[in-house]
Image (cartoon, rainbow, N blue to C red):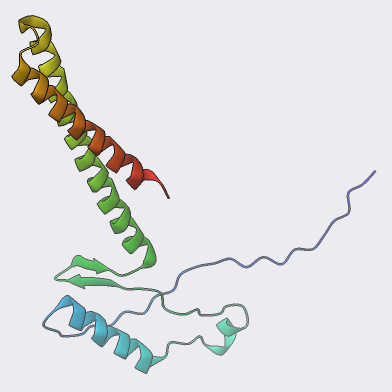
Length: 144
């Protein structure tokens, strides 16, 4: 029993780039000038290459100044920056929760060692309330 052989047409996706040198007083102005230069140049392929390749739309820029990358405007770079900001916010929230839980632990130890001083009970109640509020806020932020 032989398998039927099928013919597949496969498109290999690849990047191409166009580079421009622009003079500007800011990264934003450089980006704007480069988009204008790109639109004006209207990159294309030679006749021979156009038979097997297509150029897609530009989707972002890498901007360098003095040999150092200063901006990446691609979708992936923006998504990575957003994810890093979310991660940093979550880490800060974790630290606040940890601090509140440490405070609760300290108050609980003080209660065990010194008895139920009314001030200790009030501090413990406040710390528990703060920890519960932080936990609720963290859980609400984790939901889609």
